[in-house]
Length: 435
Image (cartoon, rainbow, N blue to C red; front, side):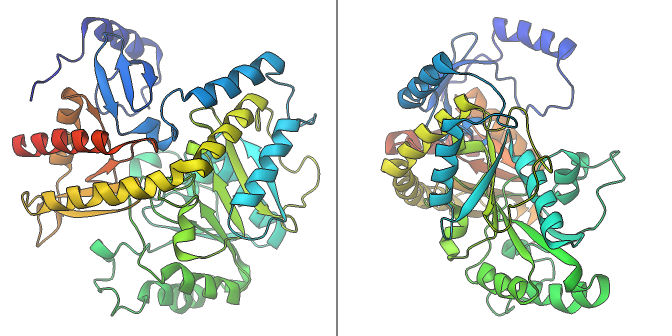
């Protein structure tokens, strides 16, 4: 399979300027200098065409520049771009909040705090949980990623580089084991383990570290994203929720990456029929426009005016894009994510029979992770090979990203069709043969 000559001459010039003027903290796995996008494809500044299975890190849920979303943005931008939802009222913001109250799990008696990103949504949830419960301690998970602002970073335990040099962190946060069954922290096997990782919370954390009556909330990604596309086993969240309810601990569901239809349900937690008290949303909510949302029961979100606010949160243009996005999701794209995931997963699992360095293939809908190992028996991680796979896919016109230490993630836009998946898997296997 032919490789593209990358980066091209125009891209090289941009890369030089980027090095001068852009923060070195950004992580760019390969030199893709993207200029435009449409549907499943993007083009770089030199005219090279790529199939985008990264989707702006699961953000462009309806594909690039979907006509319905573009029209909604244009119409709103011609009417009103900004007045600040902190001090003024927006019709578009109220309409979106009403819709979020309808589509998030549970009854419709909910309120929404609007912000600009997933990190901000989690920050709001952290403040709200502590304020409402008058408790300080919060539980979060090892391998979790909730953002890079201080509260969100303190909840995060994905990679040391995301925390190194930034302490001290927000106090009162305890990290517990996520049910990473492929790599069980306590070397047990599901289902014979009988959810020992949940027993650990009550038997160790609540008896040795903090009284449960002092715990405000537990933050969980219903499917861990940055940590490695890790899916908990069936029954885990049901059992966890029973424990949390026993001690009146709030369940905060971080749906930033797994929500908005990506897993074949509007929100990933719906796969386990558990209702969280607070839901955090961002990424795919507005097809690329900056928007985050913290959705909670009305009785929870009754804090005083000024307790929390955001100048740009709930921007009317972003809200218009979100409403157009949700309509597309409800019309057919959530179902398409389910169908295309069911079509893609067997193809990727078939590759496991050919390539021994694929240790695991897991996913729901169009949130799929492929774990790359040196040895299937020892499950030793192979980060170098994973990184090379990603780079070689780029050279062949397929954009994918990694997560965790050694996982490749497939997260195409929810408009993807079988022909796109066939082509992506063809490119992916061509790379696997080479590496």
